[in-house]
Every structure is written in structure tokens, then in C-alpha cells.
Amino acid sequence: MAKYFEFSKHGTNFKRETVAGITTFLAMAYILVVNPLILGEAGMELGAVFTATAIAAIIGTLMMGIVAKYPIALAPGMGLNAFFAYSVVIGMGIPWEQALVGVFISGFIFLILAITGIREAIINAIPSGLKYAVAAGIGLFIAFIGLKNAGIIVDNPATLVSLGSFEDPATLLGLFGIVITAILMTRKLTGAIFYGILVTAIVGMIFGVVSVPEGIVSAPPSPEAFGALFEPLLSAETYTGTMIIVIFTFLFVDFFDTAGTLVGVANQANLMKNGKLPRAGRALAADSVATMAGAVAGTSTTTSYIESSSGVAAGGRTGFASVITAVCFGLALFIFPVLSVFTDVGAVTAPALVMVGVLMASSLGKIEWEKIEEAVPAFVTVIAMPLTFSIATGIALGFILYPLTKVFKGEGRKVHWIMYVLFFVFILYFMFLREG
Image 1: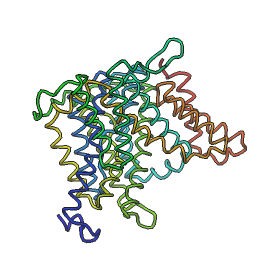
Image 2: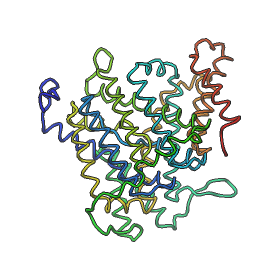
Image 3: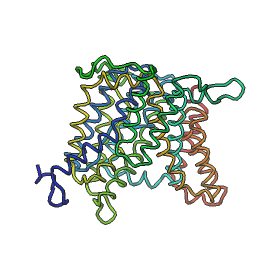
Image 4: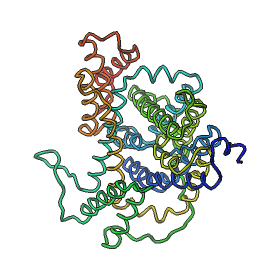
């Protein structure tokens, strides 16, 4: 084992890698609670999504550790799950079984791009400003969902939205959770988001807002959504123009999220060689296969987690840390009775959604706001996602505006031809394909 993972080469050992793997798990364990809550909005059964989430994390993280040999963990991605539930299923009216087909196909395309090397061309085609804007916009969208679920933000016939009532115990619990999680993150506590959920749930139980779990350990919930995509996968009715947009969005967000995470974490661990990522093809292939496996199991797109940086900070340098993280996800399968009560009240998971939004919104600082031709498409992308309650709409508007602003700036030749293709694709999307 030490020889396979090259412990001596990376200056690490079994104990250090084990601690790193556990640290990464604690930092991202919140997804076991949050993902079922979000996909549950799409009509999926919570227990089935919980099991599918763990399975996708186990498969993806094991592949990343054993095949690519990186201390990077994978699980269904935040933002991608929100797009799946709120934009695709609720917004576009696509059944969740068909939405899983979109996830599966995007994973397959990702795999082709990973093994052919086309990925570099695509990465270079999309301007950096739009990449940052998409990440920030998704962050605001996720935070908005968290505030809405906790009752902190409510609908108002006069102003569309307004502040919720502080007389509601659930709303107060949500506010408490956000504050305590922010404090834990400020103190740089590893797993702060997970512990924030835990503390909020316990306080909720004390005051009778959250139900007390009936047990601690049980057999994993039945994966009822397993294989649900196969029938629509073989149906011609699934492949509409709208589905093409869905597949592209899944692919786009996963592609850049994964690429950014891989480079960021690998650089932190000093694993980059001459500015390049060794075994990049294997790492991207692991991500894509995990997405396909997760779709079959019954969950949204699986992607690499930036929370892996916490494990690297704890000393993780090899794929063995990822193997340990995968084992932790396997053990977590048997504590569903405890985790299930966390999803009963939206206020419990609201802190996680808001804090993830904070982290994703940090990319706003990387946008060139002083250049109006960059600022306008980026701003519209960011603001449109929460205001239209659609990630796809935000991406589409930004990709339409960017070529226009650059052309009228006199810099049309600097825009990659792929961006012009996407310009017309999204124009057609609004003209003929978008529902609602």
C-alpha cells in the first residue's frame, strides 16, 4: 500500500493520510443531508437520494484515490443539484427520471472530452469572467434557497420577497444556525459547515422544532431510484431541444468546477509539475465515471469537492486519503436515522446552503469590473440566477451578452468561435425551447 501510493516520495505516512481522509469527510459530510433535501424538492424520495449520494461519493472518491492517486474526494455537487431540482424538474417540467438521463449523458460526454484532450480547447474558449460569474451566481442562488427554506425570506405580493417573521421558531433556528456556522468558519474549524448543521439540529431538538431521531444505526435506505433512468434513456421522447440545454449546463458547470478544484487542491498539495497537473486525464475520467454511476444510482452530477483542501491542509498528499474518505462515506450509509431528521426542517440545512453560497460568491472579486464589456455579461449572469430562480437562464443571458458587448467594443475577433456558436444556441433556447 505504501509503495503503491508512494508515501515516501510525498513525505507522508499511513497515519497522516488517514487523518487527512477523515478531515475531508467531515468537511463535506453535509452533502449527505443537503442533497436529499434539495432533490426531494424534485419529488425524489429522501432515503433513496441519501443512499445514491453516498454510493456516488464512494465510487467517485475511490476512483480518484486508486486510479488518479489524488487526495481529492467527490460527491454530488452543490449548485448542480439545485439546477437539477429547481431549474430542470420544477422550472422546465422535466420528470426527474429524464433529468437523470441528462446527468448520465453529460458524464459520458465529459468522459470523451477527458480521454481525447478536447477539454483544454473548451476551457480556453470560455472567458474567465463568465466562469467566475457562473460560480458566484450559483452561490447566490443556493444561498437564496437556504434563506427561503428557513423562512428568513418569504414571498410578498407587494414586493415579491420580504423578511420572514421572527415569531416563527423555525426562522429563529435558521438565523441561529447561520450565525453559529459563520462563527465556526471564522475560527477555521475543520468541518465547520457539518458541525453547524449538527449544532442547529441539536438546538432545534431541545426547543421542539426538530424531531428527535428514533434510532442511530440501521440498514441503508433502499435505493429506489436505482436504474430509473434506463427507460427514458432509451426513449426518443426524452431527447428534445430543451434536454440539449440541460445536458450542456450539467456538462459546463461540472467541467469547470472539476477543473478548478483539481488545479486548486493539487497546487495546495504541491503536486503540480511545471504548471501542469499529472494524470489529469485520469482525474477527469474518475469524475465523469462517478457522474454516470451517480445518475444510475439516482442522484445529480457528481463532482470534485474543494473541501478536499481541508484534508490536504491536514497532511494528505496521496490517493490513500481519498480511500479513507470513501470508507467514511460507506460507514455513513448506516446512520440514516440520525441524518434523516436534519431534513425535516429547512432551518437545519439553511446554514450550509448560505455558507456554501458565501464561499462560491468569493469569485466575484476575480471579475474585471472596470471593463464594462466584461462587467455587464458577468453581472447579468450573477443576478439573473436568483431573480429568475434558474441557473440555466443566468448562463444563457450571460453567454448571449458577452459576444455582443465584445463586438461593439471592437474586440469581436478576440471572442472564440465556440462562444458565437453558444450565442446562437441560447438565442434559439429563448425563442423556441424554454418552457415557462
